[in-house]
Picture 1 (cartoon, protein in one colour):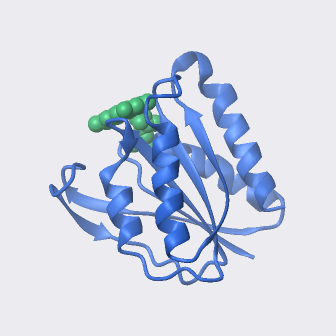
Picture 2: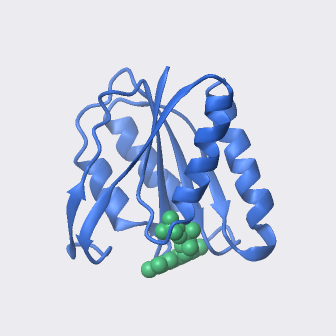
Picture 3: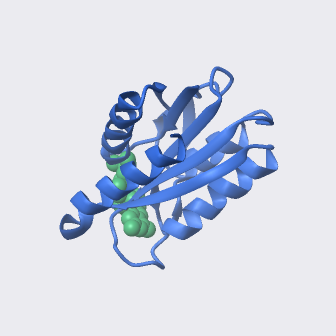
Length: 154
Ligand SMILES: Cc1cc2nc3c(=O)[nH]c(=O)nc-3n(C[C@H](O)[C@H](O)[C@H](O)COP(=O)(O)O)c2cc1C
């Protein structure tokens, strides 16, 4: 199974979790590629231009990763997902990172947005994890997210 981890990471947190996830999946014998969505301009709606929009075609399953920004899915990942072609026959899962530990601060909303767009494109959604970046929660939260996501592809 070819797994793509396709992510947008403004300050490197989501990328660092994705690298741990890649390592864990590879230890289970999976073929995993990380690809980054990149932009020029600011990461706010209508203020950026894509400089890289990775293709989902090579993958049987794609784990999309992105941060919460402004209590919702960051605009870059939302636009990236919207411009993807149909994903019939593909599996999808989501990794969201965020700073604040409270439920109402954008994580669930971000996951719902990712899920809705991917389901509308025909992907079969397998699960989602929210990794909290606040100092006291980070280590455990990242470990749980990586464990739970890698378990989805065992
Ligand atoms: C512009 C901006 C807005 C943010 N808004 C939120 C937010 O609403 N809720 C939250 O929990 N964290 C918020 N954060 C924190 C990021 O979600 C968090 O640091 C995330 O792990 C960053 O991931 P990245 O380094 O992959 O970009 C925000 C960060 C930025 C830069």
